[in-house]
Length: 604
Image 1 (tube, rainbow, N blue to C red):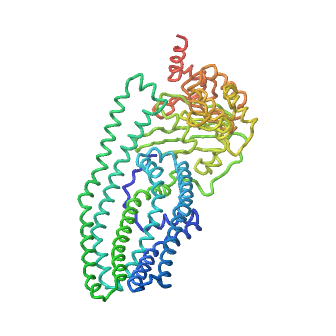
Image 2: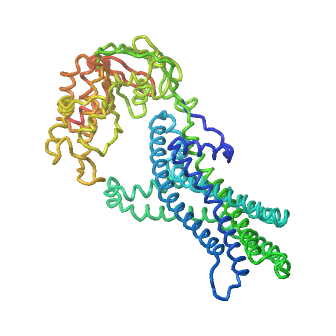
């Protein structure tokens, strides 16, 4: 089942996104959101109050004709009031910047990290195999999260600039109604030029994401411990560095195109605004000279004329930046809204299993892409406690069959039955409790040994069971030799951690699967990095301790396959042969040829 690539979505609506971000911020901490908003509004009014008190101080200073130099109570009061406002503004800036915004930023960062991780980890596997969705995940988990934090800062500044703009607009109306209108109109060219810049920069960034992913991959290879040996041996370092350099140069040039276009037009609104403010101030000079308006009033007028342009420019700049961020932050909300492709029934059926269930595939077919079947009419039955081995050439559909049983995908046609119930009717969280798994591309958790094993069943804390699982997988012996034993942190990334070999990682992953003690155990190439002697020991343990459980394993090693109750041989997505080792060897078909070829390699 392939995901259909969706058509590119239209540009996200600005005000809808603002509302989403505001709602998100409120949800994180309603108290901080409310107080931060109130302080922002107050700080938007403070510049007008400071300008007006300065006007009063200036006018009183000019009127004050006192040979003795005695300061009047009114003049002292205006001076004091102005600096009380300044003090209040400075204190509010400190609390707003260092507490309200600082604490809020940390809380929002935590919320975004958690919600993004929660969503991505819950996505269907199919989403990860679609390049468009992969690009979305990279954008949302990368720049979107950081942009949302900055978005909130800009939103707060935009609110403050709006309050300042409106208050300055009202003040200038008291001089002449048309003055603030002219000043507002002269900002329009800046709006058009900046919006055009935003669209171009975002389009360029979106086009860069696939190449940026490729660049990150190449840099990762050059910096990876796993790759450094081959790079040295094959002398491929210069070739890879050349590719990195070429790609970085290409991306840089692509980034500079919209910036160069903007810089050609940027001076136009700046020159227009400067000429306009000069003319408006010049028109008020005659009235000041003849005494119709005071020096303080002229100063108040000039400050508000400058401020309306500054606040409008600031507001426009913030809105422009928010519009740009809008395009990035929208990726976060798009990620959050990605649908579940594997739909669960509501309510789904729940088992209370102790013994393994009866499993049946009925004419199951599956395609990742239309008209390209990976599995074709697969039918077989698996009784409780049976050992099923799935073998076949690479690309024959072995791992895909396992993924269907785990319902990572739904069959294109046919049914999978668990105790005569369609797998689609089961509650997946409940079903996964009864299935232990180990994939060939298992995860390396850079945490303690005991936590690595306990992740097989996080709800259960049982030290004896943990050690027993490690013994069954052959991991206990090397764990006991580690400096911290079961408390030892693994990997080289963190302090006091220790790296272990590929085979030891696989034993640890097996221990994780065994710790769950599920009625059904699925192993996909469980011993590919383990030596033959240890492999034989692990399967001896499995045969002894898992007699009453169902075991399904995919393997290329026929030494592990031959003891299975049932062997299915896949070829080109279909069951080519089915039976026991003895019957398949007697049939002298694909399985027998593959077995003899591998056995010959061991004998020779």
